[in-house]
Length: 339
Ligand code: SF4
Image 1 (tube, rainbow, N blue to C red):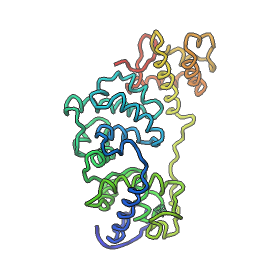
Image 2 (cartoon, rainbow, N blue to C red):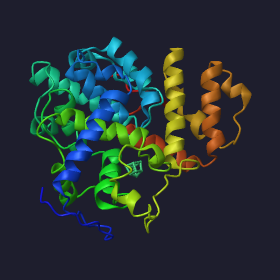
Image 3 (cartoon, rainbow, N blue to C red):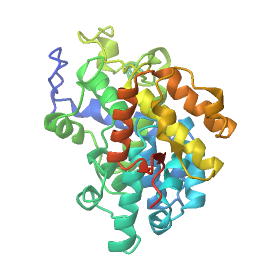
Image 4 (cartoon, helix red, strand yellow):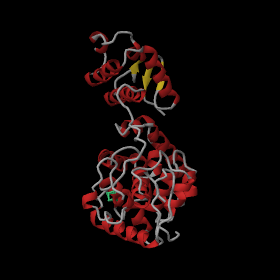
């Protein structure tokens, strides 16, 4: 890293940073992490690489508080890749519960099958090998190589990017997604020693202190050197995209999946839910029709109809779920995949 401080206002610039500032930030973050990090089960020194991989996939776009109980259940049910590889897919989706983006669960099972069948049930160690697995992107590969195997990698999630861009570039938030230049810039801050603590520490610092909406600058151990704070915390010109949920296809897909998971728990025969129940043209389902279902499943199906009275839209989403491998259709009934 070159020794020249140059706070920038250009929203795409990645300034060179003076070495003393880099060292001060590294030391502060690593000390802070050792004192303040949350005790999370996948941070236990005895945890397995598989446990770390599962935690990373679950934590994408899902808060740790929701991940932890699911992660514990998963590790008890499927402590190794071979265990998950053999699990019925319906059970995998059911145990994913409400973590969201259930395709992640399918990809994780695909990865488990590759690890079990081709890699001796051992999670690969390098970024390059990890990237070969289904559903593993550059963030997850770098995180697993670092946190599970102690490799020196550049872990760049949304929290890390926000901290680096504030402290070293003086901007409120980074661009939508990281490009090659930002990745190279961030790599320059990863220390030779204690790089695992640095990677985990910056991420944790962004999650707990330098948060997106309400950063704790008043008590921050970096407040005297943080470029954004020293500039008076200027607002970024662009507003962050807020992801709408209510009324979206994602919400309705989630409701259909909830109904299928609830029916799966009920273990009724015949399996699944009649597709007519999803696509009937009445807005509120006839209680007589729902009478064939157990109470929880009936409520979950009714919830789908509350969200949308548009049969074509529901049919389209059901087709998408089937195409994505998240549901299967058989004899006019929709069910979780039974493979
Ligand atoms: S001073 Fe504020 S913006 Fe800067 S690192 Fe600390 S919390 Fe983040």
